[in-house]
Image 1 (spheres, one colour):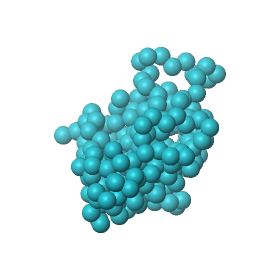
Image 2 (tube, rainbow, N blue to C red):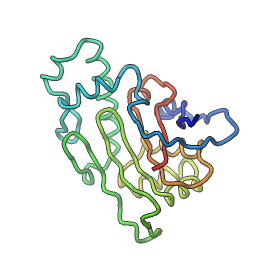
Image 3 (cartoon, rainbow, N blue to C red):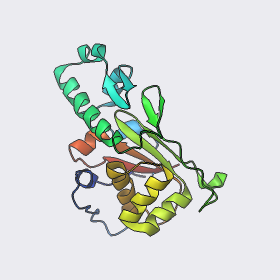
Image 4 (cartoon, one colour):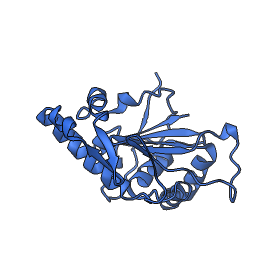
Length: 211
C-alpha cells in the first residue's frame, strides 16, 4: 500500500528548536494520493474548513474571520480556528509584503523568473506557492528539489527564499527538512503544510507528494 511521506518532527522545527530527522534509515517512496483533506488534524477537520472558509477574508495582508463566522461556530470550533489563524498570520509575517498577491481569501507569491541559474522546462513540473488560512501549498520543480537536497537545511531554506521572494522561517524550514529527510532523487513535488498539526506537534503536519 502506498503511503504519504511525513515529517513528524517539523512542529518542533517550526518552534525554533533543532530539527530531528525521522529515525528510519531508508527513504520512502512518495505516494500518488493528492487528497490534502486526509492530512488535516482532528482539531481542524475538512468539514470545519469548508464551514469557515467563506467567512475568512484577507485584510491588510492578514487573515481575518468575519463576525458572522464567529457567531456560526461552537466554542471548541472557534478555539481551533482562532489558533490556526494566529499561526497563519505569524507565518505570513515572514513573507515580503510587497510581493504578495491576494486572490479571494488566499495569498500567493509569484515565483521569480528563472533565467540566471536554471532553465525550467515543462517536464520539470510546476513552481508555485499559495497560503491559505488553514495551511500552505507549495509546488517545486525537479530542479528545485535537487538544489534543496544539495544545499542542506540552511542553504535549502535560502534557496527557497530566493525563488519565492521573502519566504523564510517556519515554512522554509518545514519544506526543506522534509525534502532532505524523505527524498533521495529529484522529482517535482507538491508540499502541503498543515498549521493545525504544527501547533500541536502531531505527525503528518507536512506531507510531500509528487506532482
